[in-house]
Image 1 (cartoon, rainbow, N blue to C red):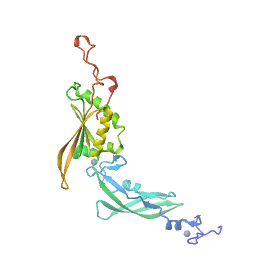
Image 2 (cartoon, helix red, strand yellow):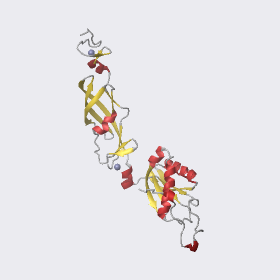
Image 3 (cartoon, rainbow, N blue to C red):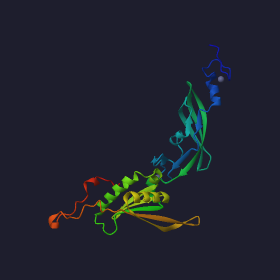
Image 4 (cartoon, rainbow, N blue to C red):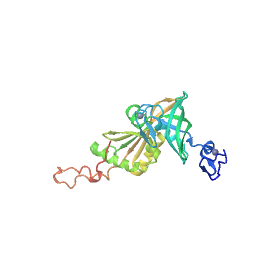
Length: 272
Ligand SMILES: [Zn+2]
Ligand SMILES: [Zn+2]
């Protein structure tokens, strides 16, 4: 022994860091802390969890499990968590109280530490379920060819429009993209269902300017909420396709050949 002792408890038989033993360090420093406002976003229909921009673990239980809770505990850089056993206390379904008993390794020894979490539960329908069941939307963006003189077969028209849409969509802000719920193919083009009207309008304006489209907005009464009329908005974009269409069959003698369908640049757009 070099005669060094812990400045807090005076023990001489333990390794010291900055003159403090591990036991005393733990008294004044939390090895585990709850992250700020821990929240779990759950799809109430299928149980999927929202992780970043994605939904995962469809079919998972509504109960908070280790997978949900692990990211909510911040661990001291010198410590390592071996496992945490969680028990739900409390009865509020939207604000879950969880008591954890953690096995933590710290400076060569393992210790048992309690950790408490108050987890806010947010219910949001995942994209998959809103597509399947809820069909919740507040706005539709209709992407169409030019009025009247559209002679393209539906599939070809949709391929062209989809390619245009995809190109512009890349520029869209993340929250506009997120608001896009599902799309439907129609003989006259595409319908995009959007869960946020402001995002839909912003996206429609971007499409209008990038594609030189005609833009028309209309609203239909959908219902009443908190004493106010709620409208669903339809944003119709008509894209001029004249320049993307091959010229009329001037060059085909006999009139048997029709203008080349589907120029090579259309490639293999998917409509899944
Ligand atoms: Zn000590
Ligand atoms: Zn779901």
